[in-house]
Image (cartoon, rainbow, N blue to C red; front, side, top):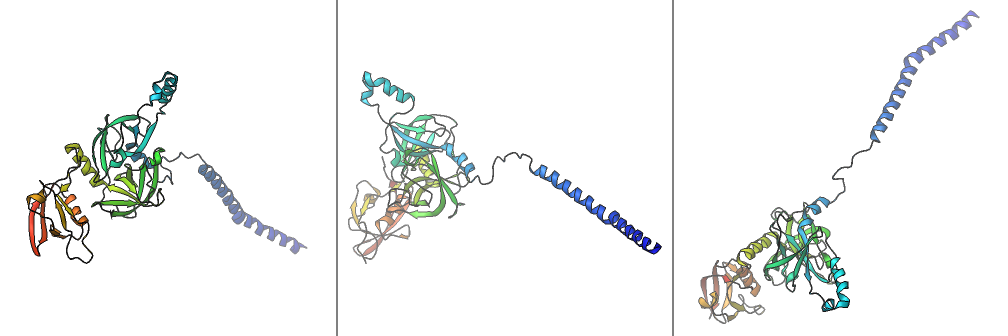
Length: 368
């Protein structure tokens, strides 16, 4: 019987030691872990101040930088004669007080100088009278036309004001095909809007124009003309000018005038009243006959021009300009038109089966 009693005592001793050295530390660890989890959960659920630039904000910062400098351009139409009749006068006055005058939406523009100079497209204001510029903040101002250039489809207007919101310039050299771009303007006259796309091409020729354009698949619709094409940081890359469309809407092929050309034309218009394009004074056969050897044929020489002064004649064939072969009329126009007036021209021609070189300079193309 004594031996049977000693066995339970020995077992209870072992169990006590297990509780003291194993169970108690384990329970304590569990309690401590629960405490940490509870405190951590409280910490993680504390209110967090919202970030001023939350993730997923897209290009809102770029738009915020650029859009104040993008304006809507309207033509304020003359007051309807009916408004001068007593029975309609009060009605018309109420409409005008609420800024609901009949106006024609023309397009968009970009404030590029704090003194009020605005770049836009020539075709936007070509038929407009009493030009009105509407800013993003709702204010409006009459604009005076400084000058236009139908060759590049650019125009400059000016509004009165100081320290107007302007736009930063991007570097076209740094821009790459595939970069995200934003088109900001006034599509269909509905008010300022933004569309997103990529830079599809940096050098894209269009039809008969000798100049290259930026191409984008950002939606460029009627009314966007004259507005800004900006990069992902809100810096100006070009002035939206036209779209290619079979439907009349945006088909993902829009074009912008590159920034460097736009600023050059701006400076020339402000300083000289017009953009400075080279001229020569000849009319050429549009294209030589298929299979013909050489370039276009001179069909007319304008008196008083460089071409007349150096003795160019009807029937002369243009072979090259400044060492560049000329195959079509457009090749020749591109060489001359894109040069500054007074630039040297070395023209190689064929006359009566003899080749000769004429040294001369470009003249000034009158666009007004």
